[in-house]
Amino acid sequence: MTILVLIFGGQIEENVTFRISIVSPEVEETNTVNSYPAIINTVFELIEASEESRWFQFYRKEENQSRSNFLQEERKKLEQGERELVLVIPEIEWGASAQLEIYRQPERQLSLIAADMITSIINELNKEINIAEGNISRDELINVSSREIAIMESESRSDFSFAEFLVPGIILFSFLISGLEIFVEKISSMRAREILKRYFATPLRAVEYFSGILGFIILLSITQVVLIYSWAKIFFDINLAIFRPEFIFYMLFSLIVSIALGFLLLSIVKNKESVTQAVIYPMAFLGGMFFEVSNLSGVISLVAKINPMYYLVNGMRDALGIYPSPTPVLLNILVPAIWLFGSIIISSYKFSWNPGGES
Image (cartoon, rainbow, N blue to C red; front, side, top):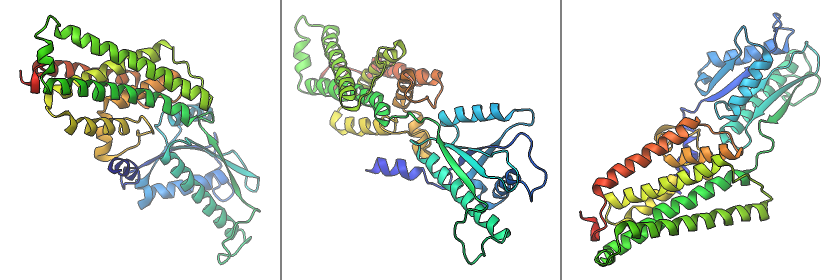
């Protein structure tokens, strides 16, 4: 519960900034009295000059940039999580039927909040326009239709499926359980009861024992992937290309990283019960396995950004074409690789098969 409060609470802290792209007409009217686009742009300029500017970061096209290219680029940034909203202002004359278009990400909380805020601003603008034209008095602030700017909301990814979004996260979570729960628990328990010491007094070598455990974890992981995918396909009608080379690479890489982290835990702690549970669930929840965490802020954001699971699940979803990775492909490999080699180096010095972990 604490983790969930920190995650969702962090998204409404005072340092949250809504990144909004404003796509204006190619040629804006110079007469601010007779131009809807000019009035709308003036409203946002006033917001930028006010105290409320700390909540917003507005992006506009360059002078030599076309409207269509800017819109295409900003929609891509919206899909990648670099924008919360894209607002398209139509090319219209005063008095004509006006319709703004809002692009948002339906699965991102900040994007939905930004859409609600912009909608509220436009609704207020509608009221002021009608008051100025004499269609309604200020004492009768009700919606009228004589001069109303309609809003059409578009989803940047209309085919988004939360069930598909969850599948890679659940697969990665099962790997994390295999590496940090099953592997650590088995080794820690047998080491503490001196069973390993008796094993290694026989011709059985440590490398052979480890190979057996590794083989068990691999078979278990394959079974888990098959069961998870079968469940998703049967009950949610999901059809994912899990045999893509990129996805297979990320699955193998994730399993190796999870086992390496298990060795790291066995190397630095003697009581696995006091640490394993405290590591697994923060890594899972702050790794974005079950929901998007790219817009966290403060210390929680830092914890998420150094979490190898965050980059692995981003890579897995991107490889399946489910959700564009908010992080570059290079980081999706580099950050987990740093954890992998760091765990190997520390384990090579600290890990011991002896009871209690003493070397």
